[in-house]
Image (cartoon, rainbow, N blue to C red; front, side):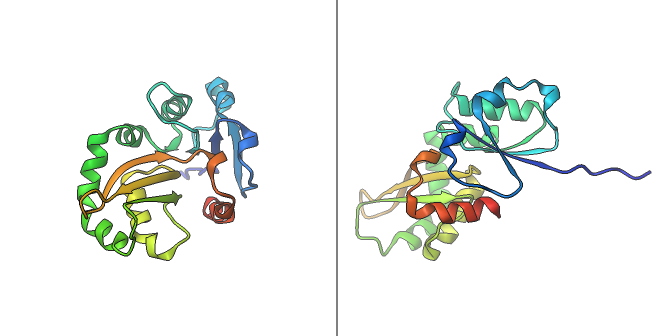
Length: 183
């Protein structure tokens, strides 16, 4: 007996469709409220969902998109575990400790006391931050995040990691984000 393998549907869910300024191959762009209002019978269970909503906080639209995607059998990014991790300062501190050697090595040349790293689908356009971006993505599997680091006493620490709203992607990074989204 042969099992038929269906095509995986790729969905990008954003707060409003007009926020997503890109055309990505093989990807359907969906408004968050439309996704939440869709009847379950109208969705394919073989879907990979990239939740690019502004917030993943408890009871936010982004939170409910991931919750419903999980219930529908879709594969959301970020998943529920990641949402909890992103909203937990304890987890952020724990992951900062786990990545301490890499953080210190990567950020050593920076003279400022604060630094923000944008991670797009696990990558950053500056090669020197690529490994740190990948490791942050492995720990916080969210499509677009901004990691804020501080060096209060000469040692870098990860302060926060938050989603990047699509409308806040700098124009200079948009081509890179589109490349990563297509990949």
